[in-house]
Image 1 (cartoon, chains in turn orange, red):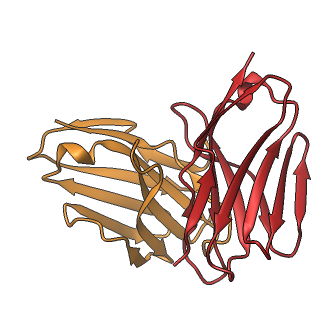
Image 2: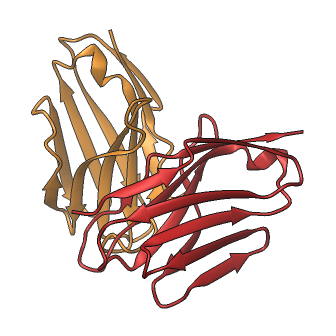
Length: 113
Length: 112
């Protein structure tokens, strides 16, 4: 493990379901990120949290709702998703601002049926 | 905002040969440039990075060069091996940004 743990690793959900993705880091980092990775847009930034405050929402639809209760935990709540939301969702953390290397989690492979 | 372009999108090289991947960036204030390697089904991993106060950095078979004037940086892999096959992403950021801007990736295939 890299110090960034994502659960679950795989998730299949219907369009009317509600589910949550979890990310946890034990690196003492202050910034955490959600990325969507699909074939069409390889690494698409969704949300940025710095010191548990959301500092960026990259025009993400409201059916994705992030939550960061503390600097070590990050959630992505999902509801009424569309098939095109199927992708690999990657969490990352960094020591501080973006000019430090990211440590990525292994991702959650999401399939919306 | 920052825009990072990466070329080529796919690259095939014979085992033992060298591979070069190039990226350009738009924000002259960017000062941090990491490279990530993502093997099939795995997470992206940082393999090397460079800051704008140096022009080149090397780590065994991997090197990165930076040309601040032209706003481009490159990844060089020498003596390529099959385990180098992966997707490589470049990225750029400047102090004060809270995010890296990634390139679109290069799929590198090493031919045995």
